[in-house]
Image (cartoon, rainbow, N blue to C red):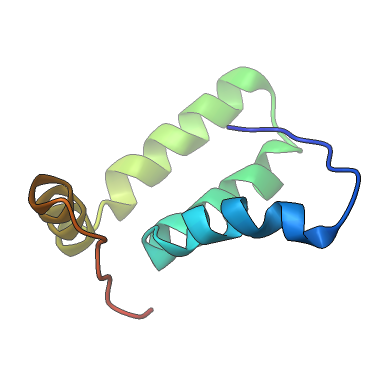
Length: 81
């Protein structure tokens, strides 16, 4: 996880926004949910929560697309939610 404090124009956010736009929509949504939920949990509870999410929500199509795109040196194309 990255933590940055940005001072200055909003355009400084563009590289980070572009990076997230190449990620699986479901993965980005899951990350947001986990971050929000982790505020209420201890570290151990948070790790258990993430492990449960990861095992229950693994989407083979997104994973296959990510791996295929990496090998073919192209951007992945994920299905919409």
